[in-house]
Length: 447
Image 1 (cartoon, rainbow, N blue to C red):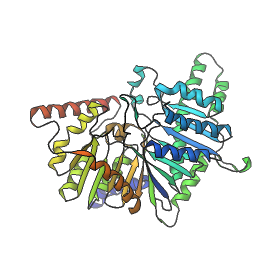
Image 2 (image 1 turned 90 degrees about the vertical axis):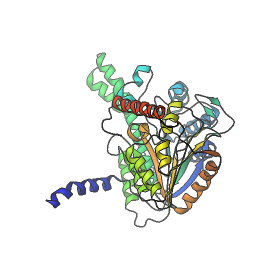
Image 3 (image 1 turned 60 degrees about the vertical axis):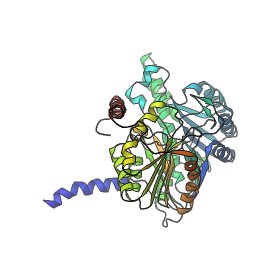
Image 4 (image 1 turned 135 degrees about the vertical axis):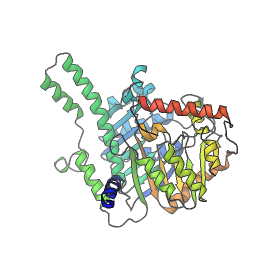
């Protein structure tokens, strides 16, 4: 019967609507380009912190730019602010000793997400899912989200120092949307801390420690100073505080400017949330789609949306890396050029410096800034976070910045790998590598 056939589809749409991040109004969103703008804003916010600071990042280096952030965090902790920092165990592997030396004596709560001290640990399926978010929240009032790691823009870990900074972006946030950023940053820290404490206590149990004592020690390690401001008698738990803040944000009666939503990709309920947000916006585009991304190897659904938009007359432009930091990643994008160019998508390569920005514009009132690339790592494995902004003024600001980048790059006219059997062979190689990489990570199904 028709009714029975349509009910599962309706239920799926209903579940998708419930999972979609709420769009809240009354926010302030400021675009920040590069580490210089972001780090200055972060240092000022941390310097004014009264109660707590949460920070989650993939890479936390030890160069002077990163040390400036570390010093601000240490000074805040020493004056009584609760400071919690979580870094990725692979991204920050080289500087973990320095970070512990800075933070632990000062009372900064420090956690490592999925430590990867040995090469064989990285090859384990779970270890391929990294913390790639870049988040900072101060007093639940000011938030920072983007793609910028805590390292000097001119410092590349593979290629050394350069004259020109990486092209990268972040946003500073105020308003209801900050509650969602705070909840995610806190969850990342607690998840990393729980994993470390659990391994330590299991080790004690295996060495003969009394079980109840070991369990109590683990709980003591996980206890965090309550996050809510005010006297101790009026403070509530971190989870309750975050949930209340999110409910308050969602129940805002008027979606006044600036409207924004915070979108995460996790391995639980939001597995494809960022990808779906992109595809929905592209499918609804009427005038333009501009995507800036260094690592670009989207799945079939994403590519179909781009090509379909170009064929119906939307001006679709991609700004990808022309100065490759990882040559296989550049190859992955290049094998798609023939398909994209054939559909009318314009492709540009950024050559003045390394490209690290992950931003996009659709029409005049949809923009996103975040940590997510458009490749299997970001769309299916890593923990990612983007902010979506529905505001014409913000979109115009971002458009003016990326237009300068488009003007300073080369347009791809012919497929970068040519045509014929050699191009087909290269495309097959990339597809085969991506297929087995995802299988190794435990991802099944078609990408």
